[in-house]
Image (tube, rainbow, N blue to C red; front, side):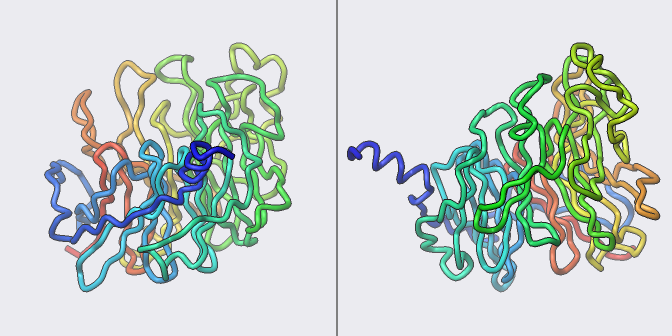
Length: 371
């Protein structure tokens, strides 16, 4: 291997890492947070400044990890005595959108591969070279960033989007949610017909997988809806590319499948809102009525004449069904101009809710105090 190739390989694995300490007092950033509308008793603050913050994960010792797809970096945010430090623990990666934590190790998606940083919280200053546990995922960049997370079965779930707006693809490779063992082995497809999921979580009681999915573009301003889906078992098909929103045939591929035989979403969300990260709220800070309900980050529309989304949505769950939708936080969009785009959500040990924003380059903290 030549010196040049060795250097490129070195960067691709994220071995060039460095620390960028940023104290809490340096985290001040001018954002019009007073324009964010929240229910009574809730407040929002900038928790950390993280460029292009995307997927979030929580370490055992309280470290918050954030993938930064367009930056090619992974960040770690630590807090000691009320002061936070933001450290770059990996650089030079290819679309590192997803992060997940298990048994002291940080897992990072990097388009066609999954990397693992062992013992990461004990060596944030010198993470070292990650272990590549698999290189078997596709490297197409269209919908190429992969959201990841560990399920109750201790398997790593990896979402793989379709490499297009609407097309027929290899059902073993694209438009799916897969799962693998922590060592990268035993790949299998768990959910099929999933156009582009960038957020999922498991119900705290039933342990079933719930996930968001982005509807296709160029069918009009008001169809199809974005989706919230539930997958209680393996090998369920959620329609793509033949059916959208459960019952809307695709104009090109719809004749190839009976939409009554695909799994409909548990909730049809607004069209083109760009649903991304979601979490069941399991904390105790918020009022009891929020417990085990779902917070969804809506990244915001682009394929629509009038913008929509750019907010946090709340899905009320009862008897394992979505029974109500309501806007929880909004204000990032003013008329047709947006100054922020929520991406992922994370419930912290104290019950506060973190929200990443890749447009403003920050992580927010939403807290509650009884009015």
